[in-house]
Length: 125
Image (tube, rainbow, N blue to C red):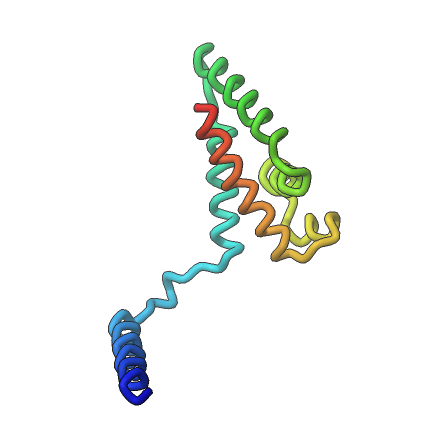
């Protein structure tokens, strides 16, 4: 037991040294809401980019069809959270109230829907 206890103490001491050396910069930390907002903005810009040529318009229509197909394959809660937040720009607290869930739960639904959509669109590409 004493031998295992010494190994544990040394391992913990090494971990403490490691984390103290890294000196976390609190200025670089972002809240989950900021990260989700930035992701939402990136998706909106991608979907709403201006296209002028006929081939670009056709490509955009094709992408819209692929997105609609992928959205139809999502569970209802995922789809509702994604559409309300990303396409309709409704804040998370409002969506949470409408869905009868906590704000954190709605954020997770939205994040999972984005991940699942990425997977579905990758399969179709």
